[in-house]
Amino acid sequence: MDTLLRSGRLVAWGNAVLAGTVSPDTAADKVTAGDGRHRLCGPVGDATTLPMFLASMRSAGVRGLMLVLPVPGDPVGLPGPAAFNARAIDVGEAVLTVADRPEGLLPRVAPPDPDGPPETLVHWAVVPVNPRVGLDLPSLSEAERDLITTVRDVTAAVADLDLARWRPQLAAALDEIRDGTGAAALAPGYPGRAHRVLALAQRLGAIADLVRTDPGGAAGTGSSATRDALLRPLATAARRATVAAFNCVVEPVVQPSSRP
Image (cartoon, rainbow, N blue to C red; front, top):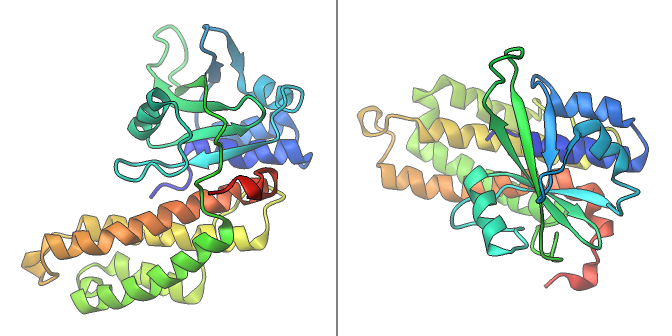
């Protein structure tokens, strides 16, 4: 799993702007990373730059940003309408604004300008969404408990399949889980617990990718059906923990009494 998705960067650094710990220009630089220009395009064709969007969030009534990483069969966190949900599942990532009139932001890499520099251009489609933002997403504590349980179960299953013997990278990833290294950085203002959960989610996602690409039977690693049964809870727990880590600073903004 790529935990450095553009939506994740926008959520982390956008929330840091709202918390007053970084400037909009600094946050925009962190969000774009190795990309070129980012543009946000509204439903009527109006466009704005990323620094302008970040600087105007508070005056526009935005109280926080939340990440969703939906996949087919697991659309958790998508507020609707159906057209937005379908686009978000197709993209695999989206940002939701916490506001009285929430919006969803969907990134798309645009073709380079033939007359401009060879850079990655990112267009964010900004569309209204239903006022259910954050209601179905797990809290950081819930995601951490699920992640720890999954680590225990999956580590035992991986050992039974003897995958680590055939994939040295997988053995290294398992070692990182045991020694706690490989933590990923979030923006200023995120608690240490979020860093730990995200780091563990990253490593689980890496294991899922390694298991998914293992050749299987020829190396005595079990049937593809066995590996698929292992991957599903692993990938789900890693994805939901990633979402919870990025969203934890916004949890108090979402009314607990509104959760189902």
